[in-house]
Length: 221
Image (cartoon, rainbow, N blue to C red; front, side, top):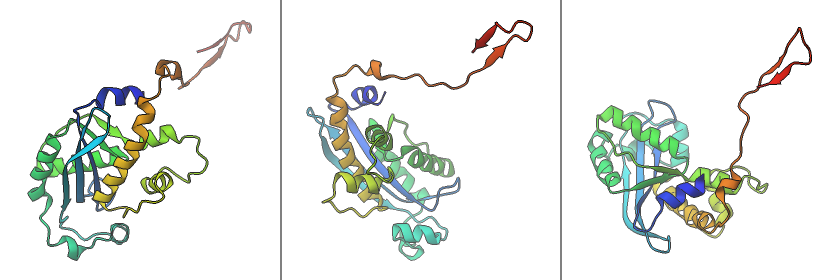
């Protein structure tokens, strides 16, 4: 499935936007405090050519939880000098409009954060096909016993031990995600096997029935 998705979406000439968000939390009321993205054009060799970078800090107009301060290194004083989401949502929208395909690490979370911003600001953000890079990682490292987990930092340090990234900085996370994509995409593109042969059926439910009057009549549905 992933191979077909990549072959369909990531063709030469595609504008790919990889983005990441840092937020005030995980819930429905969480706000974006940093939005970062890089737009790449995919060349004829399926390499990512950087076209535009955006790195925006946003004042959430609410105190940051201590856990978020610890993770991101940001605090209320730092963010107080930046515009709020109502002032910045249009700039994010204009950036996203230039993309043909979006990608992010654990993209459902980042997409949900953008949707919540869209609802609060009444600004409709563009919809595009989205590649979840976490799913690529799970696909390729499903049986790797050396990995403690599939977090962005864990995978990046495993694949690129000589590179240094400041994780939980949105722009740094975008760059790390691009590195992972550049490493894994060729694996799919160079796989010459018939992907249809690898499809598996999974049992969702089963029911056993036996006729009490005639015990030989047994069925599994």
